Length: 114
Image 1 (cartoon, rainbow, N blue to C red):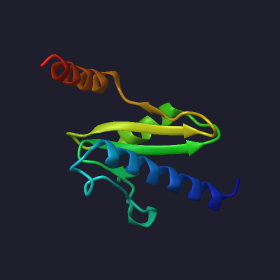
Image 2 (cartoon, rainbow, N blue to C red; image 1 turned 45 degrees about the vertical axis):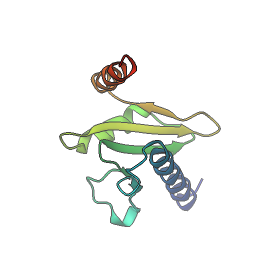
Image 3 (cartoon, rainbow, N blue to C red; image 1 turned 90 degrees about the vertical axis):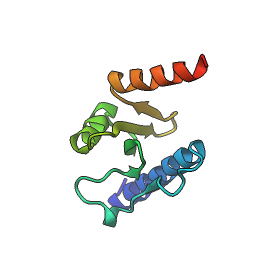
C-alpha cells in the first residue's frame, strides 16, 4: 500500500472516530473533531476531545500498545490517553491504562446504583 493510500485510510478512520465520539456525547459536538494533519503539531491528538487524548490507528498489522504509548507521550494533565485502533476487516479496539479504566468504571457504577 502506498503512502497516499495509507494517509487517506488513516484520515477516514480518524473522521469516523470523531463522528462516533460526537454521536455518543451530546452537547460536546463542537469540542470533538479530527485535527487535519497540516494543523497538528508534534504534540496534538488525532481527535480533539474535552476529556480524552485520542490516538487513532487503522492498519493491516500494528501494535495497539505502541499506539497507546504514542498518546501517552504527549497527554496533558487532566486528560486520559486512549488508543482507538482498527485492523483491516476486524472490529475496532480501544486501549487505556487500567487506572483510567477503573476511574471510568467507578463513575459508571455510582451512576448505575443511583
